[in-house]
Picture 1 (cartoon, one colour):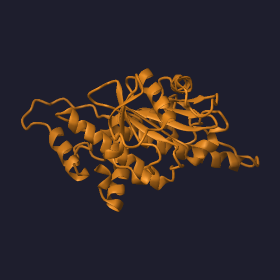
Picture 2 (cartoon, one colour; picture 1 turned 30 degrees about the vertical axis):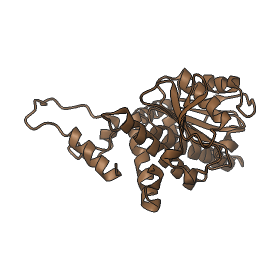
Picture 3 (cartoon, one colour; picture 1 turned 90 degrees about the horizontal axis):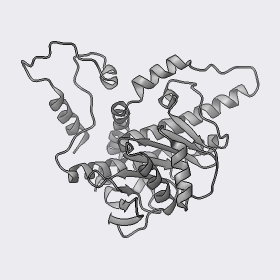
Length: 299
């Protein structure tokens, strides 16, 4: 479904019934609070579907769209990096990208369905294998976190650079507060994650958070939708870049860093980092990709 049509659908389903008994003032969600006027049109919410097939196709289209956005951001690095999405019908299956297909060429029909309990390919594109390291990392994350429906990992340049410090990000600006008390560091580099053990170690380091910095490796984010996880990756990568720039600026000792306080960081996290808001944040990127290149990634 086209983005505009999807928006209109969400508006139609969100409108209160005329004459309904809703005299009490409704508490605004974080996403609703972003709108200037309380009585303005509802913002684009995560849609619901009547069938598993419809939801599966929607997930795969957004997965492919996220890769296209990543390509424009310059995250592609040979065969490295993967996004996975839990199947809506079979809870022990995930969809993951094929090995060696450039992010900027990814389509919904390219994705491979893997049983993450057995490691067996059970559907989707069987012409190209998946990345074994990706299957290891993503399978472990999906097993450990039933609440997670999407996992994103790449070797983007600023994430790789900052990961060498083996330290969490500091709350230096509003955007990085999306990860306040919600990101961790995997402090051991175990090489290419071809073994199940390395994938398990990464999943354990992730814990209950939204993101993990993999030392000497890259970044990993998770979410309830692929849109949330992919947008969090954008924010995490740019937060690594910002911290690197700030560290370089303070190295001479003539300026000092000013950190956001815990109370303010927690406030920012509450209002900016819920699944609906992060889903909405990603939609402008997907619409821009469709504006530039069309919707062939949905095929």
